[in-house]
Amino acid sequence: MNHRERVLSALNREGFDRIPVRHEAEPAVNTQLMAFFGVSEQSSLLDCLGDDLRSVQPIYHGPKSRLHPDGTIEFGWPTRLWPVGARYKYVEVPGGAYAEVVYRPFEGITDPDQLADFAFPSPDWFDYSTIKSQCQHWGEYARFHGRAGIMDFINSLSQVRGMEDVLVGIATEDPVLLKLMDIKFKFHYEMVERVLQAADGMIDIVYCGEDLGTQNAPIISLRSFDRLFAPKYGAFFDMVHRYGAKTMMHSCGAVRPFLPRLIELGLDILQVVQVSAANMDLRELQQEFGSKLSFCSSMCVQTTLIDGTVQDVEREVQLRLELFRNGGLILGPSHAIQPSTPLANILAMYRAAGSLSY
Image (cartoon, rainbow, N blue to C red; front, side, top):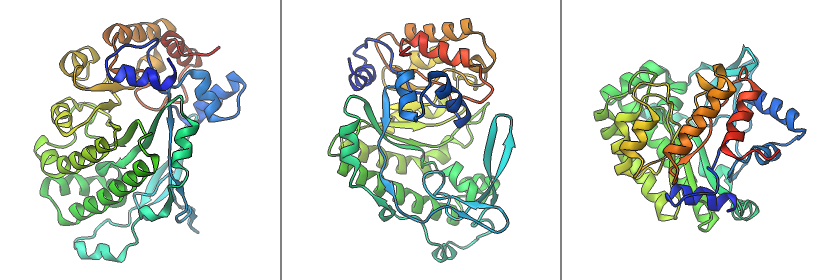
């Protein structure tokens, strides 16, 4: 099997020669891995690890990132685009730095008409002319378009409006928040459809996201999800399916209560499975939903990969091989692998999966 055949066969529950894998890590980890393998490019690293998927994206030609006099940064695509106008500062942490929002342009806005004063991102800011050639270049791989920030209303809008305002706005159906959701939805819907049109049927998976869970429980009610989010995701999933692609949605946390509704709406793959969150036991998820929903990325970055032994990692991989012996799982970390994760554990995960090329 080549990479694409392996992924599609696994997603269709038709077996595989080895379990498909997808790699994700923080830049500092990838730098360490590239040094270990003696390679200098991300694509070469993915080859070494046996990653079976490759990303296809349009070329951005919109506004560039801006450094403001106070040291804050207004990012362009793909680091940030939504939220438009937000400014960030880097916060140093062990092993790297994270950009944290320090200015939210829509904080305090109470009238939806005020949003007319802002220039929102446009699908016209992208060049789609290379999409088909990218798909052809990655012909042996499962080709996906998107990222966790596609759709992603709660997380992205919290960065321009504030988490408290967004969560209260969901509960009260605040007109400003609803208008922002509509604007964001229309942007992503049109942009993704243009990619799929340009790909001419060669995109296998479209990747979007929304963090619906905390570590212990859903972050919003099922009622609010059904009223405000479900119509948008249903329309988005239907559009993706019309172009012959599968839908993959990122969501951290305890999202089990949402899964029946997401399946009804047309979700094909849940990415990730945060197995350390409440009620997210992988065995139970496979038993309850495994015939209707595939899973991507479930090796725990909070426990096993960062704190476990090589034997712990191997044991968790073996569990997944047994649970998903006919398919339904793309193996990988449950989030970006963090900088303090032992290199031996990362290598053990891919070696046990059978994907490591050395």
